[in-house]
Length: 465
Image (cartoon, rainbow, N blue to C red; front, top):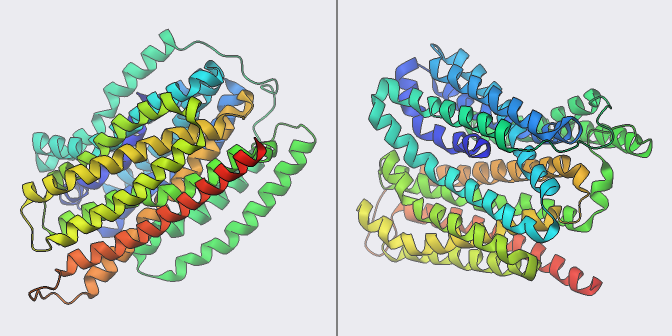
């Protein structure tokens, strides 16, 4: 429930932005920061939150994270002016980023290897449902509450969910013993260095499209410096066994390193494709926000069904399951492009949604069969005492991949559509169709890179065996 609420707010806000602008008078830059502030804060916290869970107890940190998220959600819903709303969204993202590592870390602690796949399948189901319901639930709540109050309901919905999650966590979630260095202090200097490095990576990725300027890319240069200082510090603390923020011994586990790299690459396409579909629906075909949400619901439904099934199969099949699912995902991306280009003149919402429903459903099943097994395999050989930190690194990799994919694919779509000649001659696809095909081709390249990584790891695994 905690993970559900945190992920719901990643996707639900985009639907609410027009209503927020009209109700609060927020300008374009302020609206962008309502989204970006949450994404940045959400991406900065997983490693720190994971370490806190490892050393202070997962239940305690989980309850703190959910409680803070609930209070921040209420503050967002009550915000009278845009600056208060942005500040509350940043706080909401900070606490939301703490929640996820406790969930994956708990699975590491509470389940033996043979059962973790099934448990991660349940987590994958939650992620799929949260992602699926975001656009649809946002549209329904705005329709229910009206343009002035409906967007506030989008954030108030987190309050009852979070309260129930805290109550059930106190009653049902057992206290697991933290790692032996629980008495050690949090590595504040390491947290600052890592936070600065991640900010310098995520900020230009998130903002380059909105600022319409490449100058923000200069942030990548200090990111390398901050990261080098962080690695140097953590290497020393790891060698001295002095409670590092991130124990670098994690990166001596081949399955973990491969899983992190795979997560960055795959999430570029996994989250980028729904975005360009939404842009295609709304900017190209003129769909409403609700119609656009329904248009990608088949993708989310497939993910919901694929994740738990793959979670049950991964202990027996292992990495070949991921490679097979990526192959299906690659092929499904091609089919979507073929379907769109086969009828470029088609604009009826119901017909378009139905034509794309089956290939999107298959794509969703493949995506669900990738994310859950990769998480299971990545953490399989990790010491459970470092499960929170390891889960935090994996989630940070997913955040970076998601932000990169959405930014690059979204930028390509908007830029190409803006430069397209808005004319339609017989036999020539409409500009939005050609633009969608170009952006989808980029997603196909990224999916191919993920497939290559999976094949390389599969070959290495077989050689070791």
